[in-house]
Length: 215
Image 1 (tube, rainbow, N blue to C red):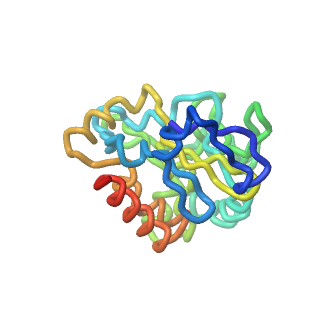
Image 2 (image 1 turned 135 degrees about the vertical axis):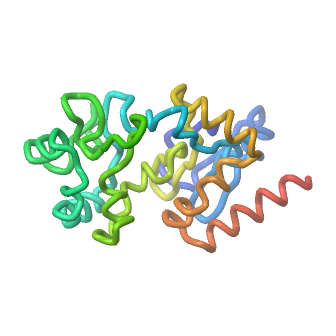
Image 3 (image 1 turned 180 degrees about the horizontal axis):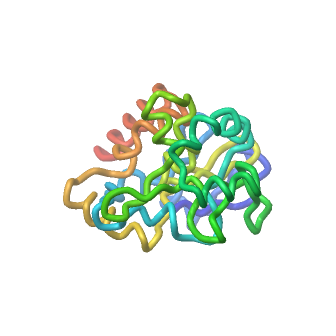
């Protein structure tokens, strides 16, 4: 996984000689530095096994961009019919966002447990009320981009983003299923990566990954 230091800008990055080969494996596109794990790690969600654990586990809600707060507020009336009573109560008490231990915006939780927007479907699989409203054509806001991008996490610095694969034990079934299907992370996340950075960026990523395969 990419090791990121505290640089003031993209142009300030200087690699020690000992790290040269390591950092050469990274993929730089526009103002992003992308871990080669996006191509090396295979990953496909297997909800029948994990039951959507990423929506339930953890000590904070889903990360939210500041711009997403107003989008979620605008969509809330359309999302509520798909929510559980407990989730609605949490949102009415806390609003559509809360803060994690670092002061970052996140979705609120139900009694410190699952995300307020979680709904439980057949066989106890966790789904997302926000996405259900979008799928029903009621809302234009699909879901937080952090959820859409998982298992990728993005760290923003002045002038560039670090795009990394995030390893979490609850996603072990996704690693096994992805390996079985031979689907790397960047392929599994095609739609969400295009949503975040655009079609042109994604095509550059694919081209660079293919180029590195032939080196």
